[in-house]
Length: 185
Image (cartoon, rainbow, N blue to C red; front, side, top):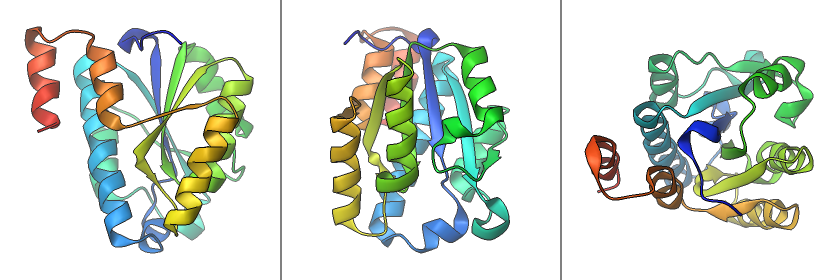
């Protein structure tokens, strides 16, 4: 496993949508939103590419406001999908190939369904795949943990948001460090 490099990373936001969020435990969705927002802001500061998906938006609604606002600032429009695995959506697969990252960092929901299936396929395609433990959710904590375990068994690396952000930074100096470290306080 190599150190994450901001210019060779892709942050993937999977299905953080209003109606799905309403089914999550309140603390779980708050944790996911807070940590995904930190990573989206770190991505903005460090120039990390970002892609986002929405599972059947007609039924599950749009991306929740705090995440949608960060995506908008980054110029990222979520890609609608029906496949649980984001890579199964041709527009996502093309956008992924166009960015050609070495590493993919996955946040979103649900951990045991769309996050797991997406992470498994990213690993299969040869990407260093990180699943952010404190930025994924499922309707039950048991399913979230089982989803993380499945991601790890599939070859993904399970890590907290802070690990990802500091790995992108690489050192404790400069304006980027100051900006990102403020997010983590």
